[in-house]
Amino acid sequence: MNKTHLRNLSLLELRDVVLAEGEPEFRFRQLATWIYARLESTYDAMTDLPKELRQRLAQRFDVAASAPVSIQQSAVDGTRKFLFEFADGARVESVLMRYDRRNTVCLSTQVGCPLDCVFCETAKGRFQRNLTAGEILDQICLLKREAGPPSEKINVVFMGMGEPLLNLPSVIAAIRVMNDPLGLNLGGKRITVSTSSFPDRIRELADSEADCSLALSLNAPNDALRRQLMPKASHFPIDELLDAARYFVRDGRRRVTLEYVLIKGRNMSPVDADELAALAHAQPFKLNLIPYNPGRHSPYECPNEDDIDRFVTRLLPAAPAVTVRRSRGVDIDAACGQLWNEYLMQKKKPAKGAA
Ligand code: SF4
Image (cartoon, rainbow, N blue to C red; front, side, top):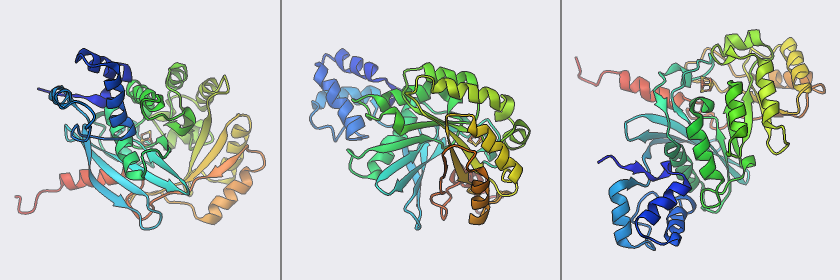
């Protein structure tokens, strides 16, 4: 019998499962605590639940549906990159980063990505499918457990493989569990969904019950250059995206950041800086610059410190708050999709001795 993944259930559905077993309400709270506060992935550890209840649940439900099959750790900054495998053999990457006294996890939402941003490693592989909410939650539960004491707060960014807004129902369902005090108990300022496009879906996310922040991945100061760098994501003009982003923050409760990947020789000219400054100046959003982290076979280059300084100096003071986010894990396959791509290449290679 195909089992249901417990983390695919909303907390209300989880409660209904426990009550339908003839158990009192507090058993639901115990079960939720094991899954999301203690981050357990097996029934064996849940010793305060009656053994018969655990056995009945185990017949119908898996606690976790995925496990890491490969882990890389950076010798430079301790960043760890995980390759997760799901029941159907599909794999995605997730990253755990340590900044001073906080951890950040970067989650994937799709196996591959149907968009084809020219600088992206994920885009080089074939899009396979959307992840379920449970598969998204498995990533954060395992990484949070790896990060240290379960009580330690963590920041979550949906910036791994895939375009989150193309898998919106699962992303919203996962965020609602993250927000819930009986789930991962994370406020919206700790969760950032990064998108490259789709103004209608930005509005849908804004109107949903998912409490999160938004990062709008611009990467070009005008539509013409954006069409070259992000051909499918640029179907909607920048103006429409910014309109939707302003809708997202309309009541002041939510935050939007504009993200701009700095690619040497592609989007960092003085004219690009002037256009970006003018564009950002008119918005109530912070601008986050991210030096490109090239994959092993990428034709594009990371800018050096002088390139970055020149670009930032040109942006200021016309632009609003500008930050530069340094790449993490540069000595491992840390470009998004790179570890997954290496795995796909290995799969394609004929086994030794094969004809
Ligand atoms: S940058 Fe993001 S949206 Fe673009 S192809 Fe890569 S994963 Fe997809």
